[in-house]
Image 1: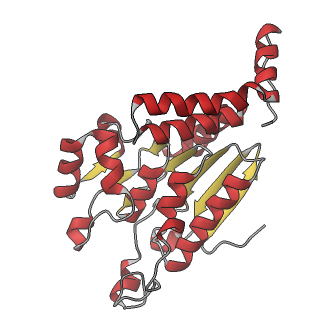
Image 2 (image 1 turned 60 degrees about the vertical axis):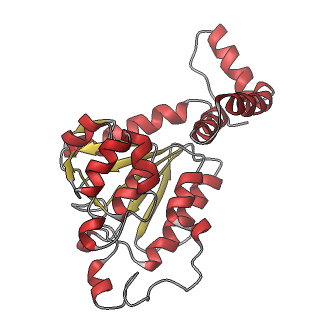
Image 3 (image 1 turned 180 degrees about the horizontal axis):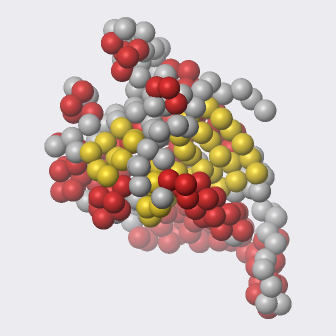
Length: 265
């Protein structure tokens, strides 16, 4: 298994758990973490044993965004131009890799997600929040914009007016406020967070993985294409699924009134 800078990676029962692991800095992002983040998601997406991914943070925070202490010292990302090469690989950046990951991603929001951390949380497919969770849309308070997907994601998740309210006013939402706005799927007590996230991931993993991944791809494409184009793309996706062993198993298990045992083939 690869070593990832300030990230923990574990795979169990078809579920990969990725943990941002800088608890002393509220999991603030460094340049090394950016590279590791992209690599670990590529690895999880390519692993045939992984059917769902959980992303969470160690300690009290989910992710405080870019490490501003390093920035102010001139050593971090954006600090006097340091921390990133002049030609940055946007195609391989965390928001792009996260967006293109076919495996469903559950964000277990254990604490505050601010700035870059908010964009990463929003880039996940499902968000299970602890009552300690917060969503902080504060980049404009720091002289920057939501640079890592937030400007694309927020209007699609909650509509233009609410996205404008959240970002222009630089609001910080509690977990319950985020639930009311539709930015998280559910809110649970802190001690139940990972239990619930794993239960949801296990339910996903119990379904036919090829079908789940194809569904995610088609939903993602559907954000940008016409209904007619999406229908055609879905048809092209369903043809190979009809020939899969998992489809045969799904039909057989239904007829035999038993849980299906999918292989991802």
